[in-house]
Length: 129
Ligand code: SF4
Image 1 (tube, rainbow, N blue to C red):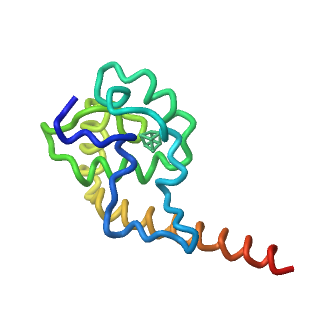
Image 2 (tube, rainbow, N blue to C red; image 1 turned 180 degrees about the horizontal axis):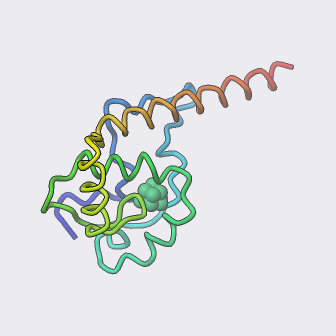
């Protein structure tokens, strides 16, 4: 485990583009790994974390967050359903296509923000009806 390992898993780190909806929801609210501890993410072979990732609806922003915030040679733990070696391969795949993980993360966060705000609006409209 690294000294910077966050409690509750990698998806709980905040980024500037992660605007909460009116009810405070962000894509991180939907993380399937909520409740797991740092050892689940940072102790290979990461079975418990990766089992959650397989059923996680926000694996894409999580993976792009990892790729945008890690440097090559500084990949630790399970993020976005991927081991450090798998993220190295994903990073190389994107780099070969001139795709920037930070830009992909921003697109994902904007999409999830719109979706969660839409869900808030729908719930408020139903409550007022
Ligand atoms: S993809 Fe995995 S690490 Fe990322 S939020 Fe989902 S369960 Fe957590």
